[in-house]
Image (cartoon, rainbow, N blue to C red):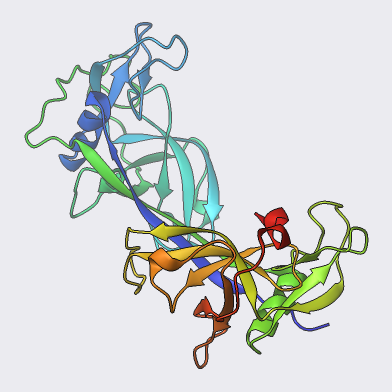
Length: 323
């Protein structure tokens, strides 16, 4: 059996969102080296702050300032940091309850090794040199061995955290988060054979042993009968346009001038239409039943587009089941 294809793929896009007054104050505060929480009606202080009480669903806006020191409540060691994580050397992910807070904040803890981390250890914020109003303004937490002192939100004090107006100059009103997914994709056995055949300028499908339909591209199983398909069948190269659409909006990074036509094409011998671009004919002359053939470019692994063959249009009854 030939080797199954696989390739690394990346899905990446910027996610832009606005922030409400509570998150705006929290993020802007981080930029100014101030950690803010929000106090609930029953006196709990939540850090990071939220706009609604998770217990009562009551709207909460009473901002308070907590200390940049705190206590590790639980942790896990990250021995192999990934791209864009807070530190590029091994570190601990830790839940830290800042002094004056009743909930814990998840962030990185810089420590020389897992033996140096324990639940209950004292830590403090290490601020980023350049701060922009994001959670990354806290570069990480670091061990903190000084004895707590003073009043207010420090560890060991029973005093409530001081109220804060949440007002800063040039407040943060929105954030842009880069969403990215890296993964390895494999088309599987059936589509590997299909792709390899395309490299030889052939279209190969698979026939269902039950209903005898030929599927292109093959999926390895019949979508109707649910049984495996193993028998390979070469189809085409010509085919018939079944349905189509006219594209009038230019896609980013696609060097095709609009308008152009994208169509479903039933290749000769296939029982499933595939989609491809139609070229070699004005877009307003493309029609259902048009007979087309693939156009290959040198070195390409798939047809660049399909063009008219010059044959008479196919009779509607020959492709109506493939619409």
